[in-house]
Each structure stands twice: as C-alpha cells, then as structure tokens.
Image (cartoon, rainbow, N blue to C red; front, top):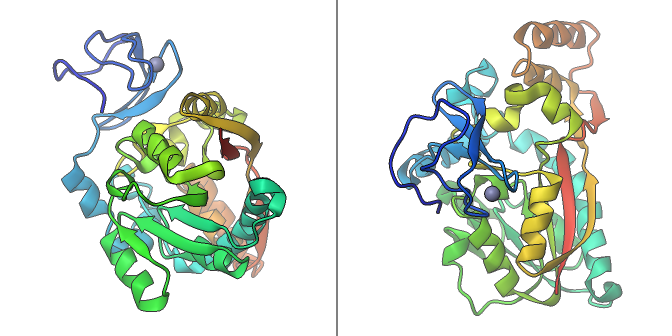
Length: 314
Ligand SMILES: [Zn+2]
C-alpha cells in the first residue's frame, strides 16, 4: 500500500525513496532498528510502520492454529514471538473485559434504544467477543483471516463468520456496531480497512477499536523492547493516540472517547511475559510467583500502552 520506488537498505535518518502510507510525505526516519527489520516513522504525521513488510504468503503461514497456542512464545526470540502462548487460557479474562465494552458501545448507539443491534467483530479470533456480544443482546457476525480459527468457530457456534480479509467483505452488509480489538496493527492495508468499516456501518454506527499507543510513557521507556514492536511476523503498523484519532476523523468518524485500557493477567503468564522484556527479571518474578504459590492468581494492570477508542460514523 505504500509506494516504494526502489528497494533500499534503511540505515540512515531520512530516506527519499519511501513514502509515508498515510500522508505520502518522504521525510521518513528509522525509529527502531530490529534484527532484520526497521520500524519507520514519518516526520510529518508520526505514522509508523514495519519495513520490510511480510508478504501475504508469509502472513498466511503465521495465522494458522499454532497462532493460538504458540509453544515458543516465551523464548525471547523475535522470530517466534507471535500469536498467543495459550489463547484459550485467556478466554475468561478477555471476556470479562469485552462485556463492559459492548455495553458501552450499545449505550452510545442511539442512546441505547436499539437492544438487538447488528454487531460485527473484525478479526474475531476464536469468537470470544462474539460470544459476549450475543449474551448482551447483539446479533453477531465475524470476519477472520485465520482459516483454522474460522473452522473452529463454525464447529462451535452458529454465528456467521466470513473467512478472509476485511477488504474482501461484501459491501452490501450494514452493521450498527463494529469491533476491531487489537487487529488494526495486523492489517496490510489499515487505512483501506477503516474506509471499509465506515462503508459497512449504518449512519450513527459505532466503531470500537483497541491498539497500542507508541507514544505513551511506558512505550517510550521500553522503546524497541516493547512487545508490540517485536512482533515482526504480524505487527505491520504502529499507532499513537494522535495518529489513530486522525485516521478515524479523516475517514468520517467522530472520536467520542479515548482511554488507556488495562488487562487482567494471570501471574504466571505475566511473569513469563516479562521475560520478553527482561529475561533475568522475568525469571526472578517467575521464581517468586512459584515460590508463593501465586501462579493462578490474577492482577489487573494498566501500563497505559493500549488505547480503547469509541468512534461514531458521522
Ligand atoms: Zn506521514
């Protein structure tokens, strides 16, 4: 989606041959240099993206059933840092978080008058959010790129699920609420994806979206050690409060609410995950968690690296 005149090695501060996918300016610099990738940032609009980008074939290899149970997730290696260590184990904590989100979206939608809105979960994974939304009265559908996930959902739920890219989704569908929970950073064409969501929402429809804030204090402190940057197999674009809000407003949404969104973690999972930031620190915390028998205890943390946005189609 971004034009590139020639393939060049990014080493310096500004490269003339690469355009910002968002504002088309050429003043681009390398924000982070990873092992085999660069994270580029536009000097003009602050949009950030991975360079080089994976091919569609490489993406299809990443999104299979192992995406949800990646045994190598905690090995501290960028090449194997993708997906989830155990997505099913996170089901209940995720669903607890989704419940207030769908309730708020319903309330924002025509002041909550529509008790059975049409809900679309874009990047619906194994259907956790659809399950919650259906419990809260929504008529639910999903889109998912991962074929094994779709197969699994169809074997369990009656919810209609479209297999493929959001850009291939039929235009004649209309929805009241769309969700994009931690998915926009995975898309090959995020700007076109937002245009598409705008197209398939009814006027006044609500989009709820979560993604990282690269400019938050913790994100800046961690720099390229932030897990979001290291997921080079799947995270293709990186947003800030400013860039995601600008994108939404530019594509015909009114941003209604932006806040930092915390997560509930099991302590053993959190300790393991810390190994991806500091191997020694993570091992020490794992030792303490096991020593005190706290592995299944849960903690709610808000490091203020993730944002949750509610926006209304104008
Ligand atoms: Zn730009």
